[in-house]
Amino acid sequence: MFYDDEPRGVFFLIDNKSFYASCEAVQRGFNPLKVPLVVLSEAENTNGGLVLATSPAAKKIFHLKANVSRKRDLPIDQRLWIVPPRMNLYIEKNIQINQIFREYAAEEDVWPYSIDESIVDMTHSWRLFGNSPREVARTIQKKIREELGLYTTVGIGDNPVQAKLALDIYAKHTRDFIGEIHYETVSQKIWPISDLTEIWGIGERTARKFNKMGIHTMADLAHYNPYQIKARLGVIGLQLYAVAWGVDRSQLKNKPIVKSQSIGNSQVLPKDYRSQAAIETVIKEIGEQVAARLRHQGKQTQCLALSVGFSYAAIEDTGCSGFSHGLSISATNQDREITEQLHFLFRKYWEGQSVRHVSVYATKLVADNYRELSLFEDGEQQVKHQELNQVIDEIRDRFGFTKLVYARSLTADGTAMKRAGLVGGHNGGNSYG
DNA sequence: TCTGGGGTCCTAGGACCC
DNA sequence: TCTGGGGTCCTAGGACCC
Image (cartoon, rainbow, N blue to C red; front, side, top):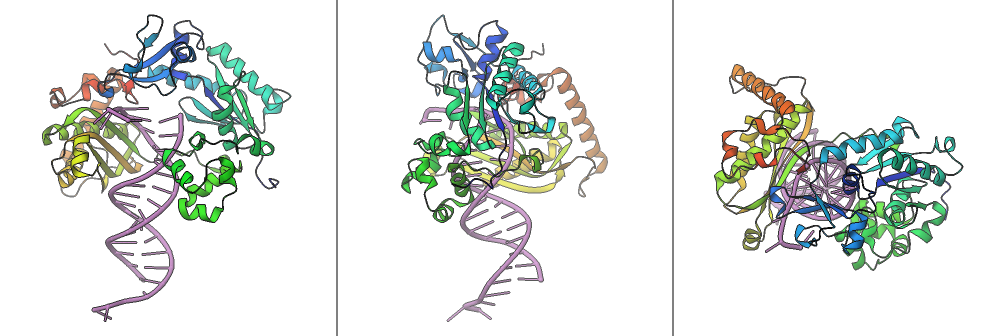
């Protein structure tokens, strides 16, 4: 194996052990590893409750598997803490953790990846803090434990993908919560893996495809003909082939921070919706949520997409899971225009099926630094709409979303009231009185 | 998995243009 | 018209991640 030409650095991938559950444990003065605790979201459409996080002790004492995800699967036991999520608390903790990382690496070398994971390029700074990358990892773990009470796991690699696999496959199961993969240990650490879904980027579908091709381990993948992989799975297949060799040529430095290219909200409804008016109410609410986020971020959208997922009964009847259609429009972030376009799309494609899932996405975003007035409507009227929306946003920002909802949202069909205060679909944890 | 939510990226096929 | 070929853009759908 010749890895001489491959980029080689020192990368940490750091994540938090049972992050939400740990934050809740710390807030209550417990050790996150030792208290049996689950974070349970009981938002309206979670069908009785969705478990967002399970502490290590809860897994151990009650033999809960990592994939226990429903309230109905939880034991009834006084010892088990069951607490509601506070998404805003977790966001705040995440920011504090990344601040600590920045004490060990330059600003541009810290890449928050999700609410509980960050990539840190330690190539240029690790020597300042210890005699080996592993020792530095231990120092960072200790610091976070001391300052925030949280336990972190660290994957170390010569490139980001090695660090990611070291984290996912090894760090979580070792005593010191540290795993390492290097070019020299790829065959030993990556090739034996036979549950391909453990590999970042391989899900159920892709694993099944590989199995059908006779690929059952990462060693099989590494020794397969890459041209055939490309033919069957495209560039994604080639990327995974590279992963099997521990190769990752992504140059984090050169990549601009990818600001999200789309803004969208979606919702699984608490029951099947049948009437046009009821479904359109939900579409309107979600559309307005998207519009508010666009305005908040100073963006306008030039393309709206509506996805409608049918109920299981309707899927069985029609053999179709739903539809998804987009519409190019002139740039806007206004409630009324967005709702109108969404309703147009809905009426065009809906044929009476009962509905369980609705999502609205805004893409082709542009900065909201000019006002494009529609040629076909009274300009003054449009400006008034914009001003009204701006006032509504300000009130929502200051006092919370529930202070202002349209009368229609108060009918039985509306879900906006119940969704207020949710962050990522779960309780934000702030109370607005 | 009888239904969590917010994202990103890739691809096949069609429309359109020269 | 029993009509070439290549490039680009767009759309709908799929797959995956946390």
